[in-house]
Length: 298
Image (cartoon, rainbow, N blue to C red):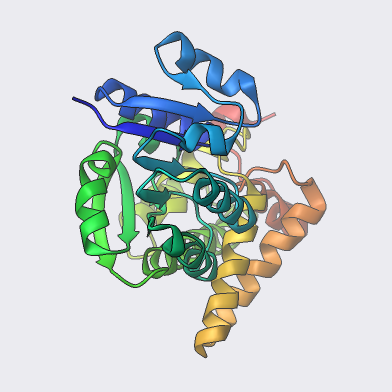
C-alpha cells in the first residue's frame, strides 16, 4: 500500500516528481498557489488542498519543492502548526542555513527534517533520474528512502542538517561556472572564425568538456532558442546562497564571485524571466558575435 504524502509546490520540477510518486501508487495531497498546476493531478486521483497546513493534515510525510529558503521555512512552519506528519523533506535548493532553521522549527513538534535538494532538471524529475543529495536523521532517511528512490538516485550525505544543501549549492555553482566559461571560450572561437558546431565537437572530445558544451550550448544556444528551462534568477539565487555559505565557512571563492556577477548582469539585461542560457547572450553582446548553428544562420 502506498504512503500518504503531502506535496507542496507543483511547478516545473514538482510536477514531474508528483507524477512519479503517483505512478508508484502513493496517495498524494497537493498544494500550490496556482490551482491550475494541481488540476491535472486531481483528475488522476490526487487530492487538492487549500493551504499547506490543510495538505499536511492526515499525512505522514510532507515533501516540498519551492522556489527558495523563505518559502521552505514558511512551509515547514505550516507543517509544524498542522501536526501529524512525522517527516518533512525539502527538495528545494534553499541552502544550509535554511535547512538548519527548518530542523529547529520542526524538532519541538517531533517532526524530522530532511534536506534533499535535487539535480537533473525538469527531464530528470519526470523520468525519475534525479540526483538527490539527502541529509537528516538516519531513521527518517530510512523511512523516506523508498519515496526518494522513485525520484532518482539517492546520495546520503550525512545526518547533520544542511549537508545535502551544501553539496547542491556547490554543484550549482560549478554548473553556472561551466556555462560562463564555455560562453567566453565559444565566443572567442566564433569571433576568430571557427564553426561553433565543430568547436563543440572538439571540446567534447577533449578535457574542456562540461555540461554547457555537452548540453546547454548545442541544444539551446546554437538554435537561438535559449530555452534550457532553468531560470537565470534561480541560478543567481543558488550561487548567492553558495557564496554566503562559503563566506561563513571561511572558504574564498574568487571564481564564484565572478560567476555571481555574470548572473547578476544577465538578470539586469534580460530580466527575471531570463533562461540560464541567456548568460551566453551577454557574452555575445560584449564580443559582438553570435554563437549560432549553420542551420540557424540568418
